[in-house]
Image (tube, rainbow, N blue to C red; front, side, top):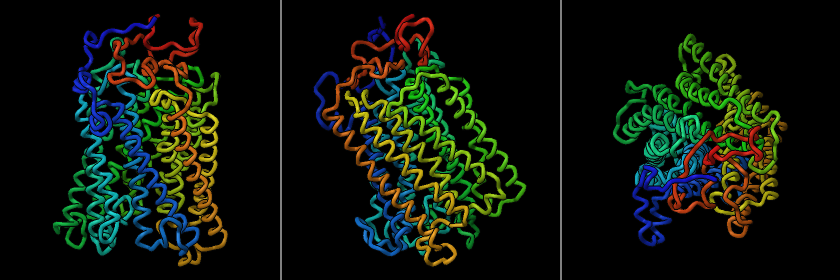
Length: 574
């Protein structure tokens, strides 16, 4: 029988949130200004999903312009060149900073870390709440830019000067200032959240839980938080310098006054490339937990994956200048960054093959979460392999800023931000809401998302290899890029996008109906090992009011030869 010890004797953190246990919480205490890590996780999750709908709508609008230039787009109207720039810029910005980061790190981190390490909440619940409030403010700021004179920022999500520093170039004066302010606030929010994640994981683990007993998704979120903290400083400084250039007449990035626009590129990508791994690692952790559960096998090479993740994080600080191969850097430096860029593909490939080794010989069940986990590996491998082409400086000079880059980026980022999220959300949905999701609708949603996704971006590899430059509003202005077969491919990709976006309606329908009237979920519907499955579904305030659990082993003890059952919960003594 599983053992537990009373909260008071356990020595776990007794945060401010427990004060609420003495009285009935009001609506605002519970849902608007909560201290409970699970409710804050939900706030991040649903805000991130709302922003994903906005980012998806922007993609719909500008792809319709590319496929059918000049026509009125239903729901938007005629897309002007300024609209197009704003839509593309804010699609990229929102999907990375307001969807991937809040959902993969903040939402899953907030929900899973205390539950998976056997704690009753975060160490600093008020800082946790403040983190979400600052994040929400940042979302309001970036969206408000669409309603000011000149509209939202249109100088691309990378905000290269001088487009971003001079209103006459980007045609968006106040919109540019709001964009950089929003990004700044968003980073402050994640710095606050990261402090909580790291401190909680180091100080509030269940008695008996050693470092090697921590589930992989928790490890990955903690490593991602450290990476973020180490990389974001230069960009925060650069953001302040850009704000000064925009509003106070300084010239940090203005070559006419002695500034250097390439400096911004270095500051941006010193953060920007580790940022890929900041969002990748939580998704990798989610997939690890899903795969082991539905293959009933121990994670192959637990420590290898962990060391590889740390090594990848270190290497990620050595590759930023591969984004400046055509910016005039010394070719000898380009060779150095070509080597480091190619080198970083080694640990990532190792990680993926470790996962494939985990599947080998397993008793695989193709549930909806497992389908998403398998799709993550398949699609991400395509993104990784195509990245090798771009890491070679000679090849990158031709490919730079073409649709090949865009397709590669989406084959990397979509598996992380979207597929990884769906894998985690469908896996932990029974724990979050106490109901089972409809598996048939879940699988239908999976196929109607994955097939169109490939239908969108495989043609874009071809268009990019044919020399189609991105960030062009209307290809009819460039006869060599307006050939009939090229336009057919643009239209095909756009139709696939419409199908994929339509399939997301199915997802939200499934979430709402399952939440309202789905089959009641038991504590441990998947027969998984980690500690969150020992709490009620959904877990009450404090997670384990009867007493926090002990931990006796790692989280991946499946199909142990000495056990009749094929799983072995972490809180169950030998």
